[in-house]
Length: 284
Image (tube, rainbow, N blue to C red):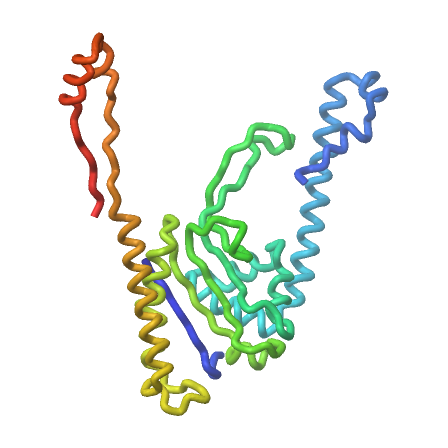
């Protein structure tokens, strides 16, 4: 498991529309040869896909024109955090149907967090390029996408931006009021990823913090000490919970047919029960 956390205080740089049936109609279908109708459907479906692709391209270019210094800051942090090029990150962002969530994050008193998942996603690819109702294959590939964090399963890397102020985020203050971090959840192991992030990144960063704002005493302040103690205890509890979940008893699967197929009376059942292998697998 690998996690990264970056804080910068100031110096940072239709499905295709089935047009055929609506255009031809039942009467026209009746008089046209079947092969002609099929060809018509294929041509119209192809034209529909081209139109959708054209509209998507226009939308992407409109979004690309909206990218400013704030977006570029996010893009550079994401590229660094998940090891992609800035061009790849930009393309993913302007292609995302949740693109406007970024504007909601930038606005005054906007969203407190902006989340991205980078993980394997299943996509359907038609085995034929002519029709939309042909057999499909599920393909898995890594994808970077914006998420609200509550609708998709988390199985890869989460990259997050947290705002520290309610003021509008601008190109000039984005590096001061936005913090960035990532944590890894490969294979869906969220607890282990969170534990590593807190114990190896956050707690060391907090304990080395010199400026605690209005608290002039800093780490010597009793409230700060209580806070750090509480965070330590939380991580200990998290670690204990994770170990308890992983350190479980798994019963070995046994084919009982060979033991019960010839049982005739109660004594046979008792004898068979004594002969069954009492096995279990203990992880930990």
